[in-house]
Length: 377
Image 1 (cartoon, rainbow, N blue to C red):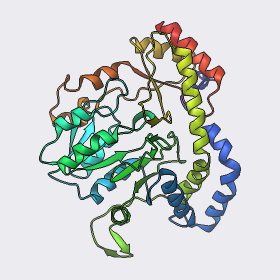
Image 2 (image 1 turned 30 degrees about the vertical axis):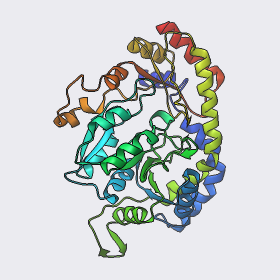
Image 3 (image 1 turned 60 degrees about the vertical axis):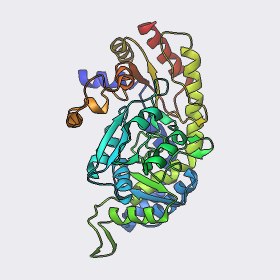
């Protein structure tokens, strides 16, 4: 075995996420359907896609779901369908994956960044209120790490500004706030089914959810090359569709999502018990939220030491996210300096994502805690 292979074998002892376990669980359901699809050649659209769109809309609690190619497209198409483009400003938290801001830029609008709250690292409504200008057309709360942002606190701000709330629900499939599902609280929402998500495809995939039939129709139009009838193009669109193979996988996983999310909640509770009263700052769930723990993000003072120790023990980790959006080279042009968003900046230096997936065992978590506490106290 080569040195690279040996390192890979060690790194796989406790993976950061175990997609193989999920695939093994759904394989008996999807295998005959995938083989049938391959024989038929009906790869685009069809019953599997329609069935998934209906089922996912029902699970979120909305009337419409439009499957698209990926989560970035979902937000981009939601923005375009809402009429947002050049000259408009869209408020986005600095602590998010860059795709949230990218979608705004792709629509031709300008992302306006704001800080997050120091406890949950979700968008700060007070910061949003201070960032509103006459050009503000939308606010994008990001439902980060598996819990929903405080959308109800953003609603009066949006109403006063004449702006829409467009949810980024990519990390919150199955999450809820005050009884309402993530993806149902704003005018429109985008989500991602990237394989590592709570509801993950076997490749890239995403969806837009909304109660507004006109917005849903507009998303479908733009994502289909601006065409309702073949070779008749009403607008300049793009090619962004959910394919049938991904829909088959997503249908099978959607049936298991509630159970898998419950397993994540049990794992989060176990981590909290193992790490309570230590130097590790454990994450908190915002009151009113049903958290689905897409990520278990702790905060430690000596993160590099923790990552090194966990890595040596064969334990996978992540950082979500190491660089706030305003400090990336891609968004240097926005003109924000270091210190502009102190909460997001400090968090970026301390956050550490521990292994979290439905099939995570108690023994694995005990090992993670043992090594982590041995490194940071």
